[in-house]
Length: 351
Image 1: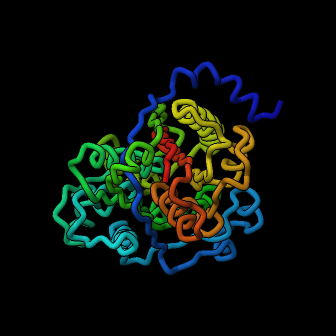
Image 2 (image 1 turned 120 degrees about the vertical axis):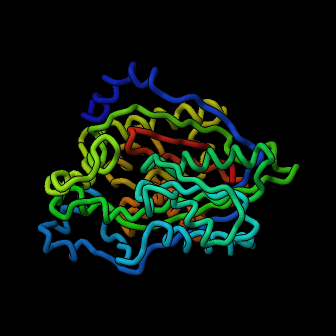
Image 3 (image 1 turned 90 degrees about the vertical axis):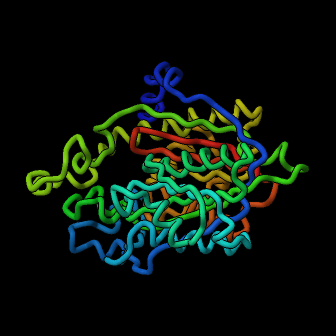
């Protein structure tokens, strides 16, 4: 038995009691997607002066390059560009958007929300709010937005994952700094026609959390530990990650939560057409795919181009796959986000 398999076996009794509840939300379709990555490309070779080895980065993470926002770009700027592309693809005017949800852990400001900044810039009249769940943020936002559409209170829900992760990591932390990049991805949710409403949408989904502050967090900057000269001198404004703990947990939760949504839908992996996991690290993706038995040809990966973009990861990958023609109407797509909290969101979506 491998190290990964033995770890999961040891934790199996705990995972059974920790997993979130499974729900469904049919009658909601993803009408269009869009994404945006800043112009500046940062290759592994560009990081050599920081002491980062290019071959090590590729072997350990699968990342070859990432994007970096310019000094005058914030999360809402990336979100705006992704949103415009998404709405243009759908043929929907910004004024027709009646809900805006932004998933981000790198908001423009502590307050107001990045979603409000985006709403103002788009010129739509709509409620707008942020969801903070780091790398699983888009899945939380997607499920939340789908509930609004399913209830009939919203016809065009704009769901955006946007991050400027390059400003959360310490250049001195050569094990963490190369992992992250900046970007944004968007999806437009709409109610389905009556013909498709009974089968299209979130066939099943699960959201959950296992609170663990120390595995993945930014220690200072909140009300628990306000920013001060001392915290800045100690670098506590930067992302801190226990890579080994996160790795083992992520592999387990991908398998467990995927198994849950498949069972709830009465489907098997053979029924799934495409799998998009949070683009955190190729070793996590490979280990999760191997452990759960997901055929590699069904797994979409663009980690090598963008690195880990946290809440933007899944919608950017979804848009890439969509634009490449890898998703057709009626296809079943498995989405799984996992990250700080620790939290996760997994869904089966009929396109």
